[in-house]
Image (spheres, rainbow, N blue to C red):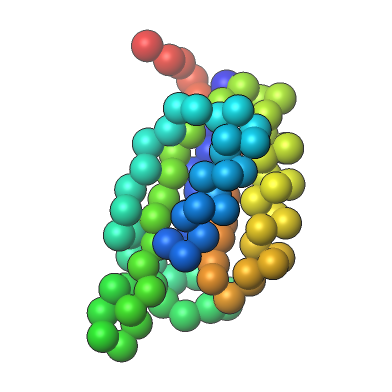
Length: 97
């Protein structure tokens, strides 16, 4: 199993949800109103007067066979809306209760 953490501009919420549905990824935890800024490009997302955009984040635990197809869909979305900001990170899951 793999953990996939997805951080994205809230403007992409519907598109990210559609991608999860398309890949039959049902279980996840979502954080709304997350703040941050990208490592390379894009503006900060702080929810302030100066930087009004906000992020959301999702953590899902999925079978390894779903990781690359999910990442490819997320890459395509990011390329369509690079200035919005979207990143995904993957790590191993040691155990599930």
